[in-house]
Image (tube, rainbow, N blue to C red):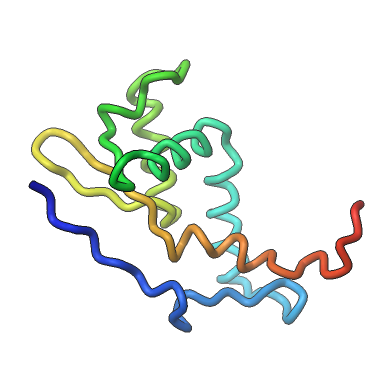
Length: 124
């Protein structure tokens, strides 16, 4: 039986990202945001993130993650590691398998960063 996952308070000030229209990003904030957007920019990683997020219990075993992908298991593991390193996923080893789960506070950062970036709703 697994332990329940701790909840992250996504309303805490530590989770805030200043939207682009309020003030310029610092160099470190831009580097962090770019790494996250780069992790999200790959179709396989987006699908894996969706797979983990939609999996029962909010976590998925790496052993369940390769079905439906036209890439090898080592490539799947690489993509999951990129998502973990960007902070979008966390992982836990249980025996010989690794289980991944979404990090809600981190997942909300890209949308908070871009919130209000197009205040007039103007399409370009």
